[in-house]
Image 1 (spheres, rainbow, N blue to C red):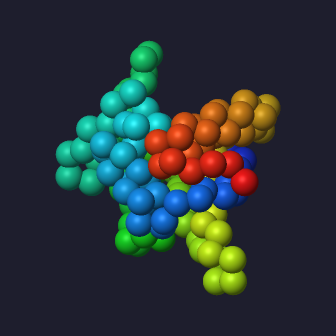
Image 2: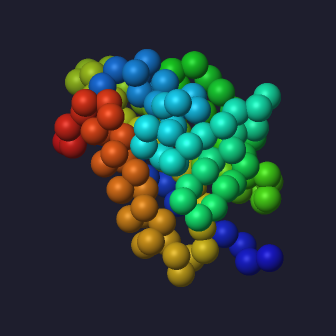
Image 3: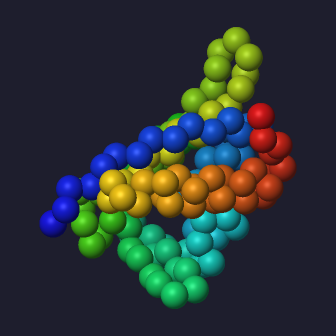
Amino acid sequence: MTRKCKIQLEYIVNCSPKVLFNRLSTPSGLAEWFADDVRLEGKEFTFIWKDSEEVAELSLFKENKLVRFTWKEDDQTYFEFRITQDELTGDVALLVTDFGEEDEKDEIISLWNNHIFLLRQVTGSTPA
C-alpha cells in the first residue's frame, strides 16, 4: 500500500463553535454540506455520495472542539475537524486534517475548499 501524506488546512468560519460543531458531528449536519446523505449506526457513519459509499468510525469526539472519523477501509487514515477560537479577536477557525496520495494533494485541497464553501453557506458564515 502506498503511504499517504497528511494534509492540514485552516479556514476561518464566522459562526459560533457550537453551531459549527453540530454541522461537523451529526449525520444531518454533515449531510448539509459534506455528503449527499449520512447514516449513523452506533459509532459508524456511512457517507453516501452520488457514485460511492464509505464507512468511517467516530474515533474522537470532544464537544464543540474536535471530531475525528477513521475510515473502515484503511484504519491508518482519518479526517478530522478541530475548532479553535482566538481569545483576543473571537475568530473561529476550522482545522481540517485529511490524508491522500501525494499526486492527488491539489485535488484534495480543492475538494475541501469546495466543501468549506458549502459549510460557510449553511452556517451563514462569510469567508474572511
